[in-house]
Amino acid sequence: MTAAAKAATTRAVRVLRRLAGMAATLLVTSFLVFSSLFLAPGDPASFLIKGRSPSPEDLAALRSQYGFDEPFLVRYWNWLEGVLHGDFGRSYLFHQDVSSVIWSRLPSSMLLIAVSGLMIAVFGIGSGIIGALRRGSRTDRSLMLFVTVGAAAPAFVAALLLRSVFGVQLGWFPTIGNGEGLMDRLHHVILPAAALSVTFTALVTRVTRSAMLDELGRDHVEVALSRGAPRRTVIRRHVLRNALGPIVTVSALLVSGMLVSTAIVETAFGMSGVGSLLVQSVDQLDFQVVQAIVLLVVAAFVVVNALVDLVQPLIDPRTAAAGSAR
Figure (spheres, rainbow, N blue to C red):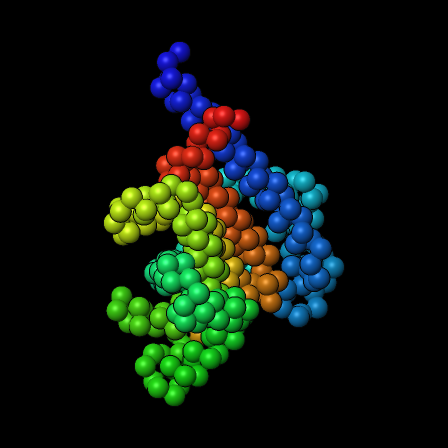
């Protein structure tokens, strides 16, 4: 077998292993998510009757209608079978299919995450590069102060501060709602995206600065600079390129985790998204919606983690060589 064929076989096995791991992780997660909700206080049947006092016969009929009287494993299997066909059940609160409820809210959350991700990439990576190249300067110290404060600032604190300053006092941005139309939606999402991205930007700045400093201290970088190679070329080809591995890994995982953090920001700014839907569903014991959103969040983590693992050798060939050596 030629070297190219061996490499192709290794990549195929790697992909199959990752897919099998993703499937196993999602299966275990689905079971944990489904079973954990049985530990939550309250009875879904009690929510459906909305405080009325039905007869035992009516309550038994209601439980039978929604399958609450079936054994746990039977309920889990029926739910899992529906999920595999894209059916997450019916919302107790909205009296609609869970998929329809989530899909109607998903665009707002995706826009929020996309704008936040762009802010994180531009300001986080850019600040980390500047801090590494100007290590010890006043600019670097100012950036490290931002990193310390930003990493410790909860999203709701940033949301309240941004609303107060840029929304109420200055009146530059709206402070509530999703907006209508593309430009109005973008105008509405700026403040929530900034509040959501503060902590993540600080973390990406720290990772980028650390990765850049590690690469700047490599022998081949010092040799290239000592031989008169242009500093910009050395930084672009030998420093930034080799530092992209940890930067992309951390950035991708943070962005995938932002779906959870949207709950705080969307609630603070009165946005109608998946995050605020999760809060509302937990408060109203709408178990079907909670299960679907939690599974969606876990799936986002698993898929992004797998994609990063597969793309990593393309970004940094040294990881592929290390994997082949093992």
